[in-house]
Image (tube, rainbow, N blue to C red; front, side, top):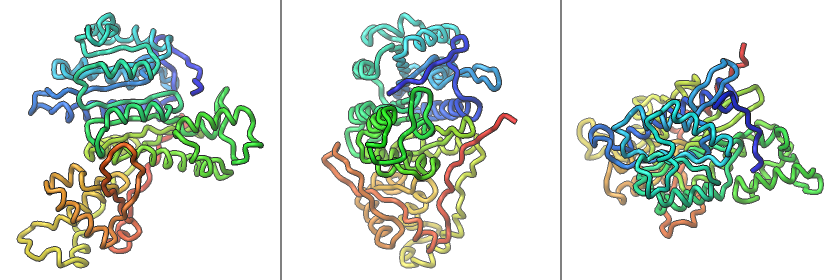
Length: 432
């Protein structure tokens, strides 16, 4: 995709300010530490499980914030900081930093010995067979780098961060996903994906905004190039009739993210777009893709705590009372304070499942009941009653096909009297 011109302040890359890049990096930092703390096995397992953070667009490791004249760690810097500051607990954490741009890569090689002198650049640039540091620096194209990553042993649970300056090619996302996720919504792989959403509609130097018509005869040459790049972003051209309209920019930005979200559901149960607003008219998203409820919930909580978005907190006792009045038969044979599985699954989906999606293999459902057929029976009951609706995601990757569901919020509001979570609103400061 067309690149955006790069500016540097010493070794730091200059990017959009306080409510943009800095806030984004803080959310990423918090999640990196949280994610590693869980996937490494934590103190109970002596942090012994193999884990990996793979930054596919590492930049320099530092970001310069012009508004406050400060240099902060970028996401790849936070990955390195985790690796070094939590040593020796992070002995089984692999950090892979990929940067295709030679200028950025040169700055990255300056930042690492200055901030983390215990890491040897020579060792980090060694071939995978000769590198014992578990820190890898790759100045390669993404395609070349992914071939190298395939040769790195013992990656274990892995978090991939696609952080281009505008958007990543769908073929790259698909390549990683198909290699890592080889069975139905397999856990052990998570993605962060950066999308500079407003660029598609506002344009930028040498990058035209998308046209507002499907009529190709009315497209200017630069607009044709942008449409081609959007085809590459989505991996198809089926998005065009929904985005190439004269609707408001805000509406088309929303549709773009929702359509992209749907493509990512092929591999991921939960897809959470976090919006950021670095300037008045600019919007970008960091999209977390995961098959594990706890990580998505924690990331959303991190984001809400930093942006002032309210955490979703429906009244459990009130909703349970209403549900019990509607379905007293579920309590037959249940003693004491025990609750029926159908209620517990419904409440967890309402409270903790992004977009209200669920299936019989959700980790928190399996913690409630190990037998898959019992979980599926409860889902069948919830579907029959109207609380959840089945939805279809085209899935050519696996031979097995399992039912997937979303909450029927219209029905839930009518029957249980609660609203869905409010949309996330990005924090914005005009500098006043």
